[in-house]
Image (cartoon, rainbow, N blue to C red; front, top):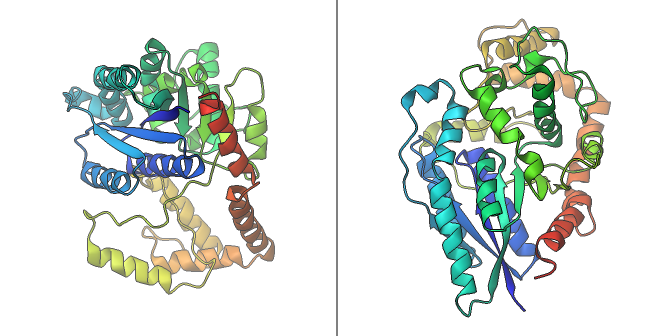
Amino acid sequence: MKKAELIVIPAPGIGHLVSTLEFAKRLIDRDDRLFITILSMKFDFSFYPFADAYTKSLTASQPRIQLIHLPQVNPPPSELLKSRLNYISVYIENNISNVKDTVTNIVSSNSNSDSSRVVVGLILDFVCTSMIDVGRELNLPSYLFFTSNAGFLAFMLYLPIRHNQIGNEFSESDPELLIPGILNPLPTGVLPAAVLDKDGGYTAYMKFAQRFRDTKGIIVNTLKELEQYAIDSFSDGQTPPVYSVGPVLDLKGPPNPALDEAERDNIMKWLDDQPPLSVVFLCFGSMGRFGGTQVKEMALGLERSGRSGGDLVMADEIERAVRHVMDDSEVRKKVKEMGEIARKALMDGGSSFNSIGQLLEDMIGST
């Protein structure tokens, strides 16, 4: 019986890369018919050395996952750095030729030899949708790996619809958005800054979103029980099958060697000293940060908890505010219940476990 090979093209951001590779490991663990090839694009960003080391470490420990480094490409013009997302988008597009040549060689090698493998498709990070055309040219289906949640996926699917109706970018003064899959009206002011960016960020998001429905399926890092409303909205007959496979996490990965080790140790010690369920971690990915308005909102929360807000949010202040929230027994109960639900979703018979099984069947069932 032929073995199946998937070609995975991750995005460079460490938040995207880690979840994509962890999901690749999960697929390998579920089906011994499967081999995976990771195509690694080289990026001239500060996080790349750690991302590259992480990828090499993972593939070295997984005999059915191989890593291919693509040749370096010329970077886009520096003026595109006005929007980092647009810059990355163009950088990825510059790799299309290398990706096509590499995928063609893999397919040809499997076809022209006694190889027991057959390439059954591509898995693309959602910022790599420009690679869908490579799959089409080679008659390979493309599956989208969406590293964010189902609510944001609903927004991305809505984005081209809105653009066709309105024809222009967002403004913070726009009326609240009514988006299928998002229960409440959404103020434009809470959208990611890159979506509001008129120097290329909005254009980049549009380029990604316009291709989502050209895929064979969308894999999203969430669980059905957490985002039932959003996931149900995708059963509209116009959206490719959506597979909720999360949570996909790396809880054992090595620390970034570029970070100050002493500072990291201090942070980890402080975390270890905190009581269970007393810390909330807020993160916007490897390239995200809190803006001034967001810090002021957190300060307002601290003020309401009995502590006057300041410009600097210290660890003890965050601790005090979180404790105030967690004093609510209903909140503690919901947090505990959702943690248990997430664990069960990944267990045999759970919603995410079954969704991964369906995905594997759809991708390689006929191999």
